[in-house]
Length: 233
Image (cartoon, rainbow, N blue to C red; front, side, top):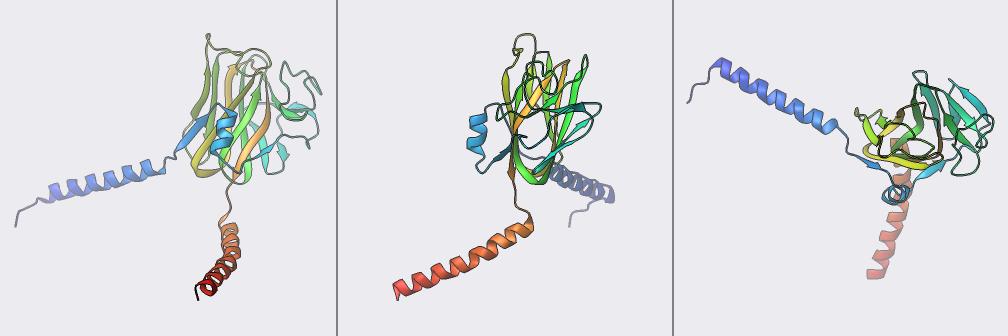
């Protein structure tokens, strides 16, 4: 029988452990897809719903959250968030506007980077998208990061050659194979006011909801089997 020194055995064991841990880390990184086209996003992710903030009362920008059915939006790190009921109501929107209805969220920090908005969902979602209006007039990036991904993804980057004009409408979206319950949107452009509207989510049923759905399908399956049995008898 070949002889293996204790040192070599220990080294081999350490390498195997390191390899298995590396595989576990890799497996934990979700498979995410970024979108810049609204039609492609909705086509690839059936069953989406969206929120257009029509039920939320107007308010000037502040540090408080905005809550509406199924989600809440919170400004982080000094960012400010308001609710517009029109392009210049209750405050000047600097070219931003709604893309569905008349209400929309408004974020702006004069002379500094706009900052981060955190979207929190009451149920897990596997897809998220939104319309951004009047963004990208200054150099910077649009970043998306889920709470179940660990990666900050660049959804769009702006430089001197691809700045957008006042009032432009931009779509950014993300789908992920691992559901998430919150996502941050960060706009790094300095002095870049923008509006947020038509926020899409794709709710993922909780385990209890799956159980109820399966329980409801069992009688249907049993009835179908009985009908097939009578037909073949």
